Each structure stands twice: as C-alpha cells, then as structure tokens.
Amino acid sequence: MEIYQPAEDSFFFADFLKKFLKKHKINSYLDMGTGSGILSEVALEVLDKKNILAADINPLSIKLLKKKNINVIETNLFENIKNKYDLITFNAPYLPRDKREPKSSQLATTGGKNGDEISIKFLKQAKKHLNKNGKILLLISSLTPQDKIKKFKSKLVARKKIFMEELLILELS
Image 1 (tube, rainbow, N blue to C red):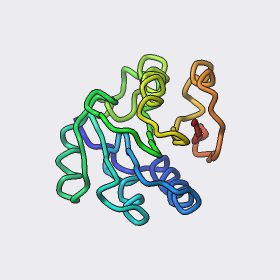
Image 2: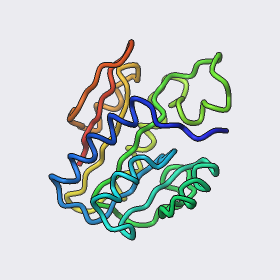
Image 3: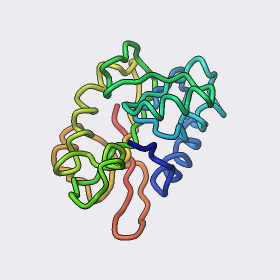
Image 4: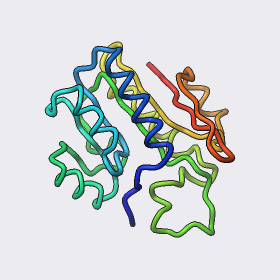
C-alpha cells in the first residue's frame, strides 16, 4: 500500500478548490480520499482547522496527515463519518482495473472493475452527509464510465485535458 502522491489530477483539483472556497461560504469541509492531504492543505488556507476533516482508507495517509496536524479519520468512505458538511470533495480512484498495475498503487487509482464503482458508492452515501445547500465536488476522468454517474444529476464545473484523457470535476448538490 502506498500514499497517492499529488499528480496532475490533484493539482488541477487543488487549483479549482482554491477558487471555489473563495467564492462560496463554506463552514465545514470533508476531504474524502485525502491521500497526501493536498486538498485539505488548500482548505486550511481559507477555513478554520477545526472545520476540516480529512478521510482515507489508507492507514499510511492517516499517519502522514496526523504529522501535518490535519484532522483526519481512517474510514472506508462514510463508514466512520457521523457529521454533515457544507462541502465534500473526492478525488476518486477512477481508473478501470488493470491487471498490470502493481497491487500497491491500485487502492489509490482503481475505481473498480469498470472504474466507476467507488464513485457511485460514494455518491449514494454522500447526500446524507451534506448540509442543506451543501455541495459535492467529484473528480473523475474521461476514462471513467459516466452513464451511472450522470443519474446523480451532476454539472460539469471544470475540465482539463492531459495525455490521453480529460479530467472532469463534477458538482452535485
């Protein structure tokens, strides 16, 4: 198991989040699947530390974020999350399973057999953890099947072309 190191998707999402937080009044923030904590660090520039919670399934991420003094919880999606938030972000593992990929990095990159399973599971659970007028920001790839994700009535708020794919940030309320 390894911690997902920030890459193009992380930097794209962090830049978008920085602008989003300046435009919207957000009092409570959940960074689901935090990995290295890059989105939580962006939120710390704008929000009070006590209003930010980072969450990840990876114990190595938890350990890293505790060292960075970020409020963090180990959880499989919303399993250990009790509160509601104004904003929930998720840079989901969005790639279809590739048997050639090392097992150690699959947790951070593979969204299931087709690539959309974890995002769908997240979206099904996220609504009940949103405050009234709350928002969800989900990052996926053009390589992620989107037919089931579209049923959640999302709107595309940002896109970025990289290599052989396009990164997409969807907003749901």
